[in-house]
Length: 361
View (cartoon, rainbow, N blue to C red):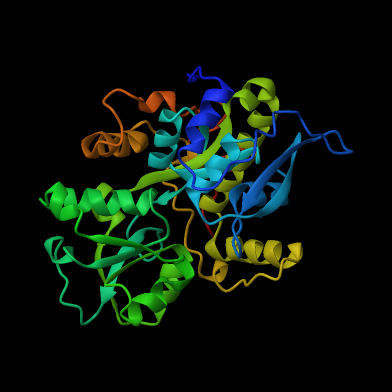
């Protein structure tokens, strides 16, 4: 595994320039162990959703680690900043955001993919950029001077929109005239229907629920732009990986198997499991969105990462001037060494226990 050899002090100094409020000092990599002798991994979840590590724990796929939920986080950049500063042990973000944070000095390595777009049919997961049915907007050039609602700046959807505009022939000056507005995902549909934004990004179960109500038309989708693609993944601090490789290995194998379980298990069975997990943890969350779940979104078995999934966004950052040429290389940002579907433990096309996938009955 390739790692950036930077000091924790340098990484934190860079992080202070990236966040608007003061960061807490690093929590350190002191291993926490529960009464059963398992390594405790602190993390942030997502409200009304089930992450793949949470699914792995529920399925009993972890052997030596257990999870400690610290709260919820809706921002990928914030999630990995919290991991870089030691407030959490692992986080998740878009690959482009990970590349920029590592370039800034954060000692992070991506260990498994956890979301993406795996196709463009009704049974697949993808992200769409929608307008109202009666909207005059049809092309990239029509977006000059218009407002596009996305979940956060500096993350995946900003990159996708700018890449789409660039490929359509808009200049940097014209792209800068397209206004990106931060709108929480749960409010995007309402903001679009009320005319507060001209285009809204919708993905996952939020998209599926919105489309059932009708009246929306896709301007383009991310699969139109890139094809099926892993978009983001889980990261650990390099120091944590070095000090606790067995814990990280267990986390990755369990999460990979849970992701694979969701990839090959009948959809309704996955939904029922998600609903039971949410109802069982007692956080007063809605299960409406997970009932709309379609697929994992990850196109590779068990979340194996491909270098090309980083390269496309690094190239864009270089083109836009936010990264210097050669500042980071895709192979420096991730490892598949712990993933059983990449390291020879399981055949890539096998199921969650390494056995041939059974046809759905």
